[in-house]
Image 1 (tube, helix red, strand yellow):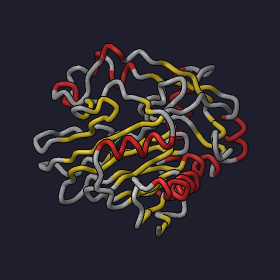
Image 2: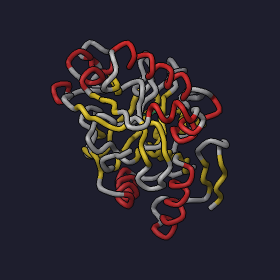
Image 3: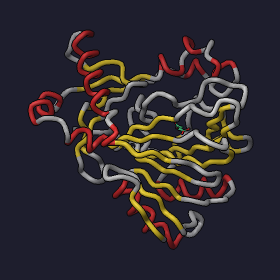
Image 4: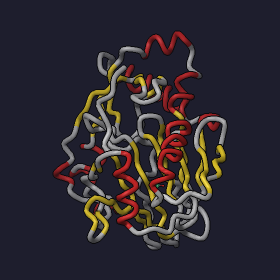
Length: 274
Ligand code: SIN
């Protein structure tokens, strides 16, 4: 197995791996823990293999809103057809941060890719946190933020292209609200990092609405710096797995007129603490 870091901040590409090979799992797991985002090139596998690989990390956390893959209710379809305009996951986010125990990781398998574009960007929330001043880190420490699925997947989104086309559904199930520390200690590595994101975080408790929006926007602008990012360029067959407690991600919607189809499995996580 050949493991090559993508950037100084996070992410690694892995060549010569086969996710079906149990004997390689310990090394893949170690790379995942170290780099937070791993890109396993050339995995031409069946959905059952994808599920087996995910289950080695933990129980599957079934997404409530994404259209499931036919015959595989535990696998979510991430799709944009060639005549559609909106991609799923275009805003910077952390999967399932609206749950009490947010998903530990997500495992995305590229099934059909456009001839160009359709990359995914990632941010290291640990690197972003460490680059803040000690004074700002002290201010954020101990604060709690609220995350919700309601505005992102609920009935107010029924007119969106993604809902109308059936890529997203089950809007009435979007009732999740969760409180998490603004700064978490990563449950595995112990590294401290920010845990707020532009799509699901609604506000910081104990601040006025204006104060909360100002602090969150300052943090979001800070996190978006290229120094904290890695960009994954996909080929059909690649698998990228990321740690939702350590990263943000965003799908780049720059391939209009072409189809992009991915299969995504999310793995259960734990409640987060400061
Ligand atoms: C996601 O947000 O989980 C999907 C990311 C992507 O399609 O690149």
